[in-house]
Image (cartoon, rainbow, N blue to C red):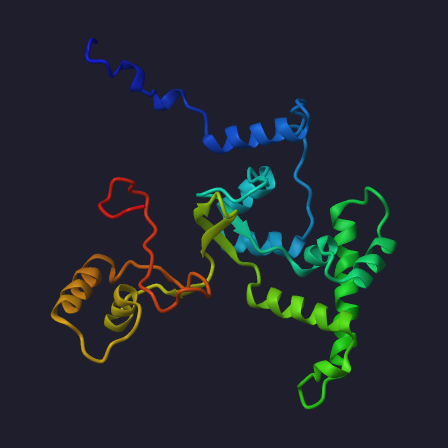
Amino acid sequence: DGDGDGDDYIDADKLVDWREFRMNLARTVTSSGKNNWSSQKKKSISKENEVLLRIQSESLAEECMAGVWAHEVSHPEVGGLVIRMPLEVEVYRSKKIPSAGEELRNFIKKGEKVELWYRKAHTLCEKEIQKITAYAENGQIDASKISEVSNEFLQMYLDNQETWQEVCLVVDRNNSGGTASALVLNRPMAYKLTENLGLLILEGVLNDEKSPRSCVSVDMLMEAFGEECAVYVGGPDAQGESATLLHGFKDLPGAV
């Protein structure tokens, strides 16, 4: 057309689903050039979780059983998810508890399926927890009375419970440091704004004296999101700071 913009035009109707593209790309790489995953049927590992998912969202349950498109990556990607693995998986992968890991490896046969070694790991975790709770007196455990291995397992257990089933959205990645920042998506705090909550979102802390600017900002926030708002805890860090607004408008002023 002579305006030089022809190369920038993209026909959305000809684009494939980006999730399907990434899924097929990952499968091709991990299968050494032989993309044979498409014929694989979804394997059931936890019937209880599948029933719960169907209760919570019929559409997500159908997508899950039809073939989950999510795949692992070697490092966190902005826009990707970081998921807290169950304690059983951490014990299976961890080198922090040599005796537990060795005991688990003695249970597991080479090439054993995930659902089988997971159940064995679960049994081992229950056994270790029972061993630790046997030392409890009046609901408290004296760490000096349990072994070093049990102590390390207890710390791993408590850390896992604190971040149980967290699903985090990666919003920033430091390539030089190899670290990433993420926001927890599944820790809901409120689904309706109040004036105090609005001030907390904007200012980060509740002040006894509100400035005129704060009052105006809270009023605008209430008008925009008061009846239609989802506020999440977001994670343990920087709780004293103002909240982060997740949205899909890249050209919005101040957006990153």
